[in-house]
Structure formats: C-alpha cells, structure tokens
Length: 116
Image (cartoon, rainbow, N blue to C red; front, side):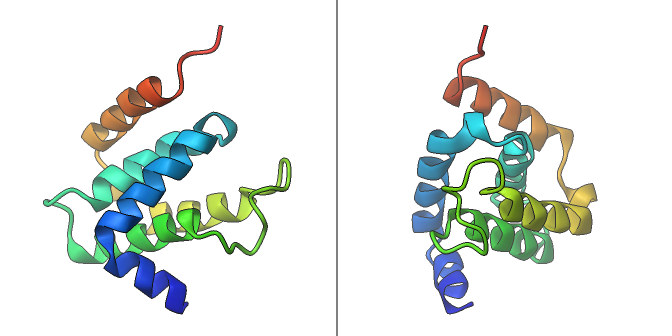
C-alpha cells in the first residue's frame, strides 16, 4: 500500500512508468484501450478528483512491479491488472468519454502497428 501511495504522489514518474510498460505489453493485453482511456481520463483537467484518484490507483497497480499475480506468467499474468482496472472503470464509467477512448485508439495505433 505504501508503494502505491508513493507512486501516485510522483505523477511524472507514474506517467513515465506507465508509457514504458504500455509500450512493452500493449500488444499482449486485451484491455489496452480501456487502460489508455482510463489514463487519459485520469490526466484530464476536467475529470473530478474522486475519479482521478480511483483511476490513478488502478494505473499505479498496473505499473507496480509487485503484483498479486506476476506479469511474467503467460495468459494469467495480467489477469489481476485487468480485474483492478475493470473494478475502477465500473466505478467511474460515466467519466471516461468518447474523446478519451478515441485518443486511446489513436495512441495505441501509434504504439502497436496493426498486424496483418
């Protein structure tokens, strides 16, 4: 819990760790669009503080190296990350706008080239 608090306090470090990890795993996780849309919502100045806190908690869990289930395990390694993100999005679904989702799709298109 202390690691999570520290990670959310240092927003720039969190952003850098988020983008670094996303670039490594974006093509391997089916929830990448939701994750990036949540990131854009959490960093949007129009987003309420409560929503930001919930989403930053889920994003911090994604970037932390210590998970309940190791991200190195094939198939199930990101299951806990997906569950935490799904729970967070369920709480704040109305705050993640189509603009956040469109920006996420555009970003993912640049990070992970379309596979043919």
